[in-house]
Image (cartoon, rainbow, N blue to C red):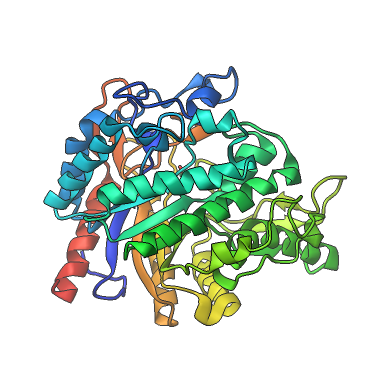
Length: 446
Ligand code: IFM
């Protein structure tokens, strides 16, 4: 395959997963319950009552999965560490068996020549902390810092770069505002202290990483927001949604201040959650890299009924994924340019830490996924040509896995998983990605 994607020589090719979505073994080796174990057991919470109890059984099958990664030629693998494996109730005594699993995983990755890129929190909060309010309790940020120190002291000798949090927007809004994800709270805007507390946790953990000479990244799911029309009401609604989805999670980290939240009707101190000095704790450590998870742009109109000051509307006349998400690859390029315009010199190098699509009934032929990845890599190369510093691309996901409230119905993997037998079968996209990586290496002689 010719290397049509003009990306820099040191560009890092990767794939991503997350603990609860692949590991299974939820009661093994001393792991404590997470909010997702509890939420998924609630009748009606997850499609078809699916849980992550077994998932891809990666906890036992990680050698096979690393062999697939090696064959694929990955430079890096993004995974997450399950907090309840390390500290089963969220704080207190460390569970050595939990740490030992990640020791084995990291060593096996390094043996395979694959750089581990861990995320410290990808939504599986220990239920013991949720019982005390979860991310609505400021204390959780400090418990996260303790957990981060334990993990980093164990694995930091082998891993230079860490992601603190995955998608605090999605965790806050789906988990605490709308209740469609764990922990299932329906607080609407009063959920936003959970956002602040996660950002505080990020800042505290970033300082811990820097104190040990390691790099800190944060992975946000960002979306370019388009008004449905040029009507000033739609334009104002789009600005409000942009504040909620994007700026609330990026401005404090990169600029050291929260955006004006009055358009959301949220007080400046986020219902008393923001204490003096917090924003400094979030901003001062600095960010060594921004992890960008990109799936789709968002079209926004003025609200038609009382409630949030915006309505999300579909984007017509574009293809949609099995999930119903609009496919607009150039929106990735536009988002990257917008980030540069908004943050200028404060914008650190970017790594795409997730990008991919679900194809519901796919097995091995998965041309829509190849088309999705190819078109987004074209957009990425265009952004690089316009001067944006992009260091790597981690596709979501290496293997089909547990797609949260959708259970196992949405398949995002380059590798098909038969959840009855756990058989792994590489899809057409796997071969395509392997050839792309090989061609990029050949062209750059690395
Ligand atoms: O599966 C999720 C992942 O956990 C976080 N980012 C989006 C993916 C697809 O929905």
